[in-house]
Image (cartoon, rainbow, N blue to C red; front, top):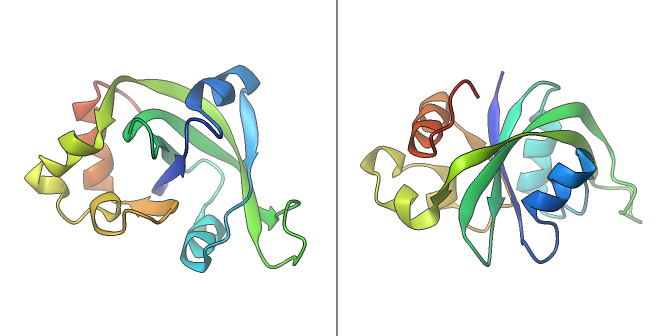
Length: 138
């Protein structure tokens, strides 16, 4: 299983909305590097759900339920989407400031490629972020 981080502005699509809906299609990604990451996702992979813009914190965990397919919101037919479901909230949201303060996360894509909306997370980063957020068994 691979791990990822996906970003959403809370004013556009907040964690609470995903929890209410239980599942969603992750559409609207228009960056080629982020799209390559969507294409690499497999069913069962887990992702951190990060509130960008306002909040700047990891607030939950989602699971990929359907691998990439043509993004129905893309008129050019060039981009893809994946389906995902909410798994669990992060008991204690992990802020960007907290991640920056952890030396072991210095190479994390969140800190190096801050504008990338879909990014890989290493197994070590996943474990450390889960520990920082009080999430067990995710």
